[in-house]
Length: 348
Ligand SMILES: [Zn+2]
Ligand SMILES: [Zn+2]
Image 1 (cartoon, rainbow, N blue to C red):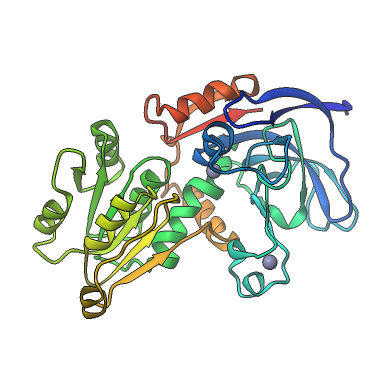
Image 2 (cartoon, helix red, strand yellow):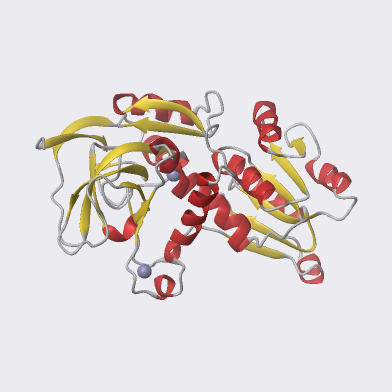
């Protein structure tokens, strides 16, 4: 094995990542070395590398948290895995001991270390990782698709199914139909939503949303969102609203779009304060406003099963595949939303 590897290193927000030669990491007990094959880049990476709104815990750091690859080396005490196994890497290294971990909500682990934020991530030839972060991927799922499941697909799955508790025949409004929202449309359709309403500010994204399964689209920059949702739902409002933008205005619209007793699940992250309706309405309507963060291994397994059975098609989700040397170009395209990418994946 060669002694060094390439890695995309972050030093300072606003400056391009630099591709550096670094020693291949040494693995310890309970760890494996992954030959990275694909690593997705997303809004989180843009916030770290470009606008600096998400500062990493240390610098320099190798970015990348949407990772798939092959096991290249196995550490002491790692059972059940073989060299060459195709795996998806869960981007959060959890402690397994805190209350959240012990109650099956690993995403809320109080000691979590996130790849590409707290520890070196997957925009590199190799990655060292705990065996607890591995999920096997079926032969016929390409690395590029596997890489994006843990974040871009499992996050909306968790929001709709686990937090939102979508039931057959319910109506759904999806605010923000980019990377996460476009998968939310597909999942809501699979789960049997009767009416799926896609809301965005881009006609191009709304056209795509229709192709992915949205029954109605609303351009919130041009139309009165609340009035249109009321018309579509015959004055009732939706059973479930999902918000993937993280802005006060869209969260406000999402909360106001739900019917009496409905649920609004907020996934989008941003610095603005959330203002809710008055307690008259909140209490009288038994509104449920829920946060939703990340996902868990069980949800990822279910998504892999859906892909394997050809019920969920991610072939349209990879907007562009770039090389590691083109990572800055990828971040720029993502930041400027060139071609409204669902996901840009770096092939390594
Ligand atoms: Zn991501
Ligand atoms: Zn924990």
